[in-house]
Image: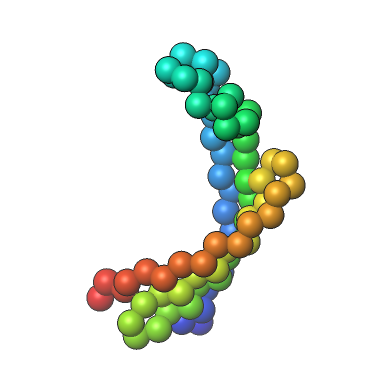
Length: 75
């Protein structure tokens, strides 16, 4: 269907063990581990004016999030 699509995503990141070199050590102050991953699923719905998207994600700590967004369509 051209109006409704789905996505699956995997997001990974690392500070390469360099966060302690940043002045003020913001990673430690905010309780960030320095590396992690997340997986999720989303749907996209295209209208004549915009694309509406809803994503559901789970990170390495089993925290769950729902994201909602609206994008302009470029024709």
